[in-house]
Length: 296
Image 1 (spheres, helix red, strand yellow):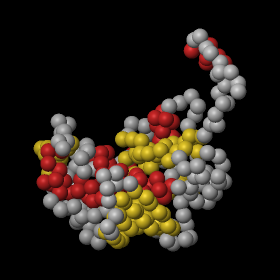
Image 2 (cartoon, one colour):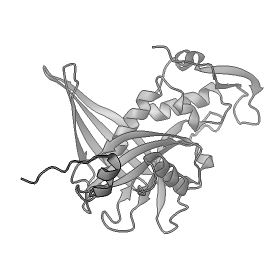
Image 3 (spheres, helix red, strand yellow):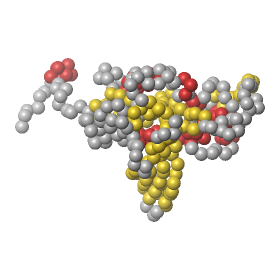
Image 4 (cartoon, one colour):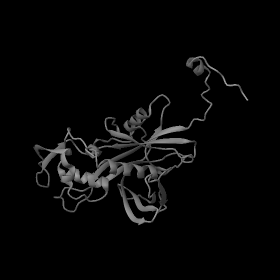
């Protein structure tokens, strides 16, 4: 057995340290860029409903060439994870002063055929009119996809709760449709351990790598956080109507929200300004209450 080296200082230890002692996985930042967009209404006098969209890029090289993917890239050795995510966001959208947060670390050993790749998911919420995306790679095709997750069935057994969802993505031009069925099995105990199985139910188009899982996690995170934080306001201008805010919330949640104004409580406050020049009647304008604090 090799005798263990004894060092008298950290400087001496670092000078002798072999950085190749352990394998080095690659690390990427994946950017889940969410926005909302007006949906077509037959009655132009109505405030248009909104749907939620996510930006995807079509991979132009192997692996997974030709598949749609979440935009992202490898983290440089001399930058932090946060700096790397900010850099990629600016490359994709032309913006860097936007709401963004880390979602989760995805590190299954076989998720990338090239090598061991650990991906940090990052969620960004951006108002669409401010985006000038795909600046860094003019050859890579980008497209907005309508995204929604809805429950199809729920089974309540003695030991588990089993939820079956549909995750759907439809390109803005309507030509591409990708759907996954998600079977979620949750233990009935204090740990609430959860297992998910993903199945491509259309079979034609699919997302690259495990990006269906990343999008699923991202939707759940956003839907959870809008219930106790003001993050949805990142998708609106500073002043907005209650109906506009409700449309954004319903786009995120994928369902109608009853008694919306009451649920907002003092998160928003009324202003003296009135919206005019619209096909619908003037409405009172609101803004975020900067004194708002969520109380459990």
